[in-house]
Amino acid sequence: MSWDADVTVVGAGAAGLSLAVGLARPCSGGGPAPRVIVVDAPPGPLRPPVRTWCFWEAGAGPYDGLLAASWNRLRLYAPDGAVIDRPLGAMRYKMLRSDRFEAAMAGRLGGYGVGVRLMTVDSVRDSGGGALVRGRDVSGAPSVVRSGMVFDSRPPRRLPAARTTLLQHFRGWFVRTAGPAFDPDVATLMDFRLPQPPRGIAFGYVLPLSRYEALVEYTEFSRSILDGAAYERALHDYCTSVLGLGDFTVGEREQGVIPMSDGVYPRRGGRRVHFIGAAGGATRPSTGYTFAAIQRQSRHLAEAVRAGRSPARAPAVHGRRARAMDAVLLRALDTGRVDGGAFFSHLFASVPAERVLRFLDGATSPVEDFGIGLRTPVLPMLRSLLELPLLRRSVPASGPGRY
Figure 1 (cartoon, rainbow, N blue to C red):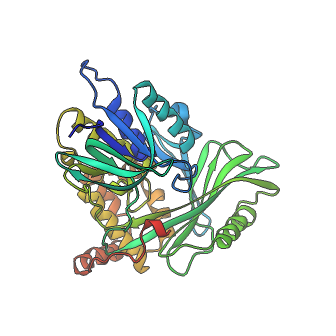
Figure 2 (cartoon, rainbow, N blue to C red):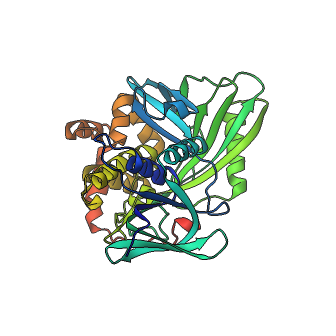
Figure 3 (cartoon, one colour):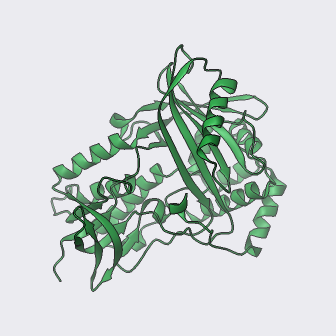
């Protein structure tokens, strides 16, 4: 069988484009790069709307020219209204809009001679010594892409079996105020001065773009999502009663649901089929952050392919210790043993923000992790840890496509 490419990447979002660029860039040693084809859905309902991605890193980064904004300080408001304002040291918290990122990455791929084939994918499977992507092109006719291996970023139809599955669900407004209302040097990561749901936690999230503009979000960690009217009411109350914005207008809106689960996402769908992005476990279960992990995952996978190694041998994007700590926290939050607002407020109040961010990236040492653990509610966390081996893993009733 002759291959259309060495590698097919399914999906042209953050994961697919990041990996495709890493694979297709010219080799520093002068050797040929793998032949890459990117498959993306035609314009329509399968294309996601413009999203906002946030991440943190030390100093300058490769996407700084694309950022909507960045901040060197983070602020939290505890449930009692106490303000926790922390400098990030060498770190910066960065905001990137998906449309600018995708346009820039598509431009790079075009410069490398990589094409994007528009098709609705029906199946991805092994075939002989490679893999086939089958679907329908923009006219509805059957279409097949043959390659040596496939990296698939489509969301799984079902979430993995887990002991705990919560949902991080949110709606955001891009607001513009009549007068100065925001501090453009500080991002509010969590504001717990909100009515709390009967089970779970709720908080505000404010990313200032100027003194007059910001992305303001209402977020919950809970087992079920809200209806549209409930998000709108919560955002209106937050903007007026808590932030006191006065006169303001709402521009763009964005909404999302991120599963927070201690389930294990499979890294492969066959010998030649590999999952990437959120489908490959890039989302950090305890926070929902994904973009920075996608960059690490893409770098490891591209290095493996270009070196002729199996991508299955690339490091997992989140290590075992990080996943184990996430499982304990999710269980403690889901049972109500730990008050989420008090937990996160105390964590940022008692640990330097730069260390907390490294902890959330899984980049802290065991000694640092132990020290952070001592600043959490020890007995409730210990009880959650001890009961985890006794809990049965079950598949959630709804998969990501239902949210």
